[in-house]
Amino acid sequence: MQWPDNIPEFLTELMRRWLDQFQKEQLVEITKLGLFHWEYRPNSRNPDKPRRRPKIDQIALMNTASFTKAYYFFQVDDITLHVYETSGFPKAGCSAVIEYVLEDHGFVQKGTLMKMIS
Image (cartoon, rainbow, N blue to C red; front, side):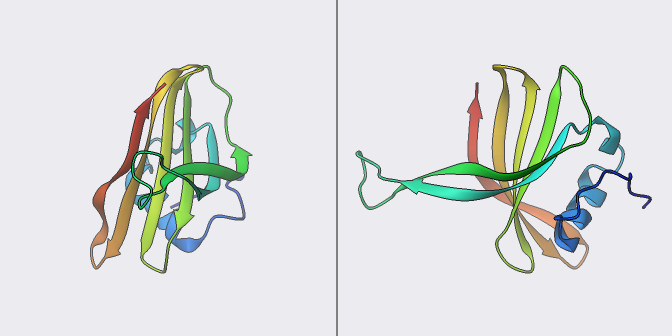
């Protein structure tokens, strides 16, 4: 695949493979790419299970548009990738964190870790 010139250097090979599999056709529509980490906070309802929130570490602006489409990555290990997807207009969009695992034929979605509407 021919990558645009503005693809950030901090993306790992696993993250590039995910983009190649799921966003090859829409790569020019992506407004931001970046990295995130999980931030854990106390949970008053269930103290044994802390709340986790994605916190963005690095951002690379890819494109400017009124409708944003951003992807942030957290690489758990050599085959597991958490992808934080946000899309929509400012203050009117949705976001989700989905876990993907690399298998022989490509990435397989294992589950939704978080989903919310803003």
